[in-house]
Image (cartoon, rainbow, N blue to C red):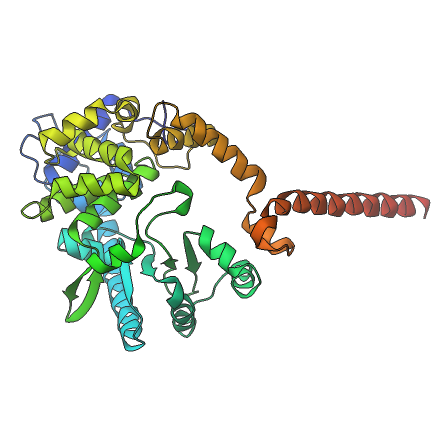
Length: 411
């Protein structure tokens, strides 16, 4: 089964897959990376393209640079890309630290997720993990303060999001959204996460516990609040899993985090917390995939329980093949989510029924923005009212077009 999409999914030829995995393993210092021959000049463009698509080019570049078979033009191109990514990553880190300082002065706790802080924390070099935006975890009660602070820096919320936040459905909207995105013409986008995981997956973690377990890391003399070791590893596993490991940079993140925290990482706590959060299957799938692809050190007991999970056995073989990242097909995504969110034999069927009910009853952002209905007890009216409103608008538009055409023909 193709996890990364039903249409135009490109599966790399076997030889390229092996070479790409070998480059990753060698770059990460895996001992048994293998003695496969290096790519021929004809295969290097495809291997480099996979590295770009999965955002691991800075990680594998040192191995590429000392490979004798790579054509000189490709090596120069890769070197320039890595240099540009390094400049961007350092710029992102500088901008993030500036925002964090302003939040600290405003006495607003903010916790960076992924991005340059993660690169500093587990890679030791922000240039090794490219990012395109900044992710910040904020408490809901501090949302308006952080938004105002970002707007003073030139950021803006999309107009629809602003109307929802200022309208009567604010609480209903915030309870069902994962994050808000603010944009700037000159600065990188900022995602404000109201919770650690998407509520659509119904994870049962307590955000306050995550905040209480967080610790402080000093970067360039600035104290930065970060996730605890177990919470960070589990977050990376659940985040990559819910995206079906569409990019292998997330897999490299897991490997680096486990390697960095291995002296103190407590696997029984990780497993218990994954079960408490409702993400045990995603946890098992992630650790099994990291061990298979990158030889990530995982306790044998954890690997044994992962191998016994039917969802892991079903999806692990296809996930070991790197594909060109793209949005998954509709039925593929629903099928994968049903398996990953199920805990018992028939849970997948319950998920399907819940998913169908949500699509029929639960209002979308478009529904909330088009009309005003009391959120409590009357939410089921949003969808049919919006459909009737759309039909009415389309009917009037058709009548107006017909009348205009007839008048023009008569003239």
